[in-house]
Length: 605
Image 1 (tube, rainbow, N blue to C red):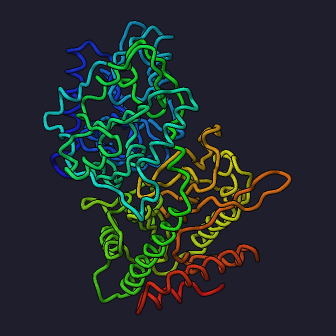
Image 2 (image 1 turned 45 degrees about the vertical axis):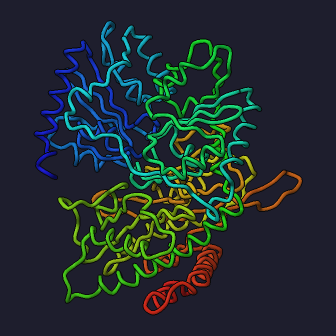
Image 3 (image 1 turned 30 degrees about the horizontal axis):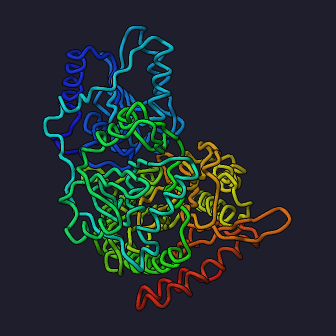
C-alpha cells in the first residue's frame, strides 16, 4: 500500500472529518458509494468513501460518529474489506447484499433523539433518502442534506473529468438519436408526462448515441438531460464536445447547457407542468430542486427498458464482438498454458494475467478498453469474490491449484464479461468436484425455458440447485444485465436471490444477462464460470410466449478441471455442443498456436 494512503493517514483523515462534524454540530456523517448520477463506478472526485477508509470495493457505505467509524458492505467484499481496513480503527459491518439498508437501521438504533445525521444531498439517492428520513424521523433524529463535509477536509479532491465525448455511429448504433428521442417522448406521453429529467449516465449515453471516458471501464460521460416535447437539453461541459458534434446535436433538436445548470433548470420549470423522474435513478438533491408547482410522475426511465432490449442488429454486432473477444482469449490462453508449464522461466504473477489478457484484446478490431478491472486470483485469492491484485499485494502462480480469471472488454460492437478457471499443475479431487458443481449450475440455468415476463430473480435458484444439493452456496448474485458498449452492469433485470422480483425486472427478448454461479472456499480456492446469454423466443402456445437463453460467450471451459462422473448425459451433451460451437465460430479468427489450443480445449468428452 502506498505510504501516502497507509492506516495512519486514514486515521488522520477521520480525525479531520470528526473536527468538521463538530464545527457543524453533526453527530453522524454518511458517505455512500455514489455520485450525482448514482453510478456504480465513480469518477475520482466522488470516491470519498475510499479516500476516508481505504476500502476500494464498488459497493459500501461509510459512517462516522464521534466514537465509531464503519463500512457496510456485502459478502463479495468481506475479505477485501478486512484487509484494506486493517489498522485504521474502521469496523467492517457485514450486510446481506449491496442493496441492504442495514446502515439505516444502525443509525436509527445508535443515535439518540435530538442528534443529527448529515449526508450530501447531491449524492444521496431519492429512494434511499426517503427511507433514511422516515427511520430517523421516527426516532426524532434530524437529517441534514446541505453539507458536503468532504469539501472541507479533502484538500486535494480531484476535479471533474475533462475527457472528450464522441459519437457512437452506425453500423454499431442502428437506431438514430432522433428515433430514440421520439420513442422516449412516446413513453413519456403514455405516462402523462410533458418532460423527463435523466441523471443516470448510461441512460444518457444510450439516448443521445454518445460515449465518453469519464468513468473507468464504462464508456460514459458526466451529464444530465431534460427531454421536452419539442427538444432536449444536455447539461454537459461544452468543451468536451467538438464543434461538429455540437452542430449534429443541434440538428436533432438537442441544446447544450453547463453541467452545473441542471438544478436551476429544474427550479425554472413552469408551474402546472408534468415531469417524469425515476426515484431509483435520481438524487435527493435533484428532486429537491424541482419547482414546487410541478407535478412529478415517478416511474422507471423509459431508456432503462429500451437499452436493455437489444435490437436484432445490436445482437448481431454482439455476436461478432464475441468472436473477436473469444479469439483474443484463445491467443491469451495459448500463451498462458505453456508459460505456466515452463519451469525454466520465472513464475508468473497475478499482475501478469491482467497485462497479457488486456494486450490480447487490444489487438482486436473495435476494442476500446477493458469493461472492468481484471480479477486474476490464484488459489486462496480466487476465493475473494472481487479480488484485485496490486503491486503491493499479489500472488505468484506456481505449484498446484486453480487460477480464476474474470475479465471483459468494451468494443464498439458490444460489452463482454467472462470468467474462466484453469488448472495450474494438478488440481485436487475436491477442486474438480467444486468446479463440476459450478458447471452444472451454469448448464442448468443456460438450458432453461421460461415464460416471457418471468421476474429475473426467480431464475436464480436454477443455477444454485446443483450446488445446494451438495450443501454448498455462494454469496453473490447469479446474473446481471450487460450493456451494449455501455456499463458492464446494467438493469433492470438481475438474476439474484436478494433482488426483489418486481414488475420492472421481467425478462424480455433482447436482454443480455450474465450466468455466473460460483463456489468459494476461503483461504483455499475459488471457482466461478461466467457466460453472457441473450433472451430469445423459444416458442409460443397455449400458455403464452416462452423464452430461452442463447449463449453468446465463446471460450472453452477447461475440461481438465472436471469430475466427469458427476455429469449426466444431457450435461455432457450441452458441453460438447457448446464446445463444437466455440470451435466453429472462433476457428476462422485464429491461427498457429491459438488455433491448436482451441482445437485441444474443445475436444468432446
